[in-house]
Length: 281
Length: 259
Image (cartoon, rainbow over all chains, first blue to last red):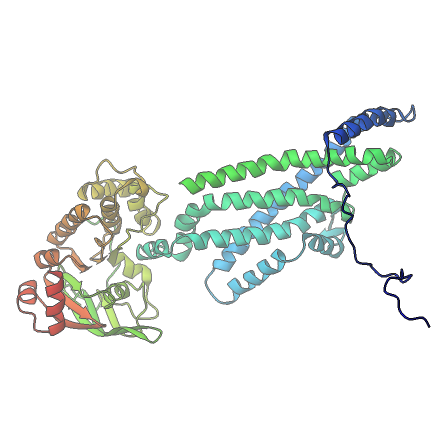
């Protein structure tokens, strides 16, 4: 066995001390690089588009399938609107239950809210999809429950929990002196809540409520994972129908991206504007 | 004032010649802190009573106990024979008799002055809207706020808001009015307009209980003054004797500081 030579190159997979070569130029984009990229794109894109006489260009593919994809998007909007409607009604009930007098009801409502607020929406969706039967029998009448209805129900659960929290927070934000004043005028607790407290905080609830809606609208694409026919599912199907050409991936999914952005961004801006308006009041 | 709706029936045992408010050995503690330590006094119908004393002496707590906003720890309170301290208390019946005005006015900010005054008679007493509106307008005129009917609380000065609050309380046609440091949050210039309103009310024969720091007002308007300190009544009497010859050392020290 020879003595260990520290200078002998090792054949073991060890990481040798790394020293930066002194004269190595730093990697930096220069105008010349941009020109090169542009030139490459100018040459490559027409070649890409013309590759195979029968194949449509990406833009033509998007235009061709746009009506179908937009139908899918309409489904996303419908699911989100219905989930929001159901979730809001249930959430107001749950929020008021948290504010109710007594020991059991508020605690129960609080637990329900916390559970549905602190689990991933997708997990809730899976639960609803696989626990709710595909049809229910009401008074001998068979009511089919298609996947998108189940998905709507699945999305309404997190909406419910978030709306409940919004209601509770808004009511708590009204000073206690308003309750005292109403109490001294012989209003009952329920009258105080409905006539004095809630009208004051309805405005305050609007921006966070719209935030929840924007989130749920974007989350509806998760329904594609559980097999609901909506925009993302259709996009994947269109891509496959066009032969799965890799160059179609970006335009098709980009179209989906654009639809959601154009839908959610104005909601977000409007919410922000409302928030600003209420702040200055 | 004419009564369009019958008042809640007073307890059968109560007659107007008895004290309208009866406070007997009331104790109140928040945790281990004793705020009220055995307070007893009577208020007769039409009497104006001022409660004065240093901050933290339990004045506000005492007045809040009278309309059951704060539950007492021990002792008893009765208003027109209604046992306020009874756990089965009918709070609606009590609060129809007892009006309350707060330091911070506590108007409902989403309602106009007129709506603030009209709300309770309409929704609590179920009175007819037209009749209530006429009365509410008259009450606002009485507190010198004619023309401000459609103003929201945020558009009114502190003194104006406080007068709306007084009108709002009066709309329930109470027999006793409680005023909890109602001028403490006001600018010096607007204090007077509120005090004038209260004085007019007192002169009409309304039974009034005021927690106040306005010594000159107490001297002019009160029939009886109670000085509380550390949860007990240290000294009391009609203003003439109270201000001239207070016997208790703490009272004299307090008066020398505020007068």
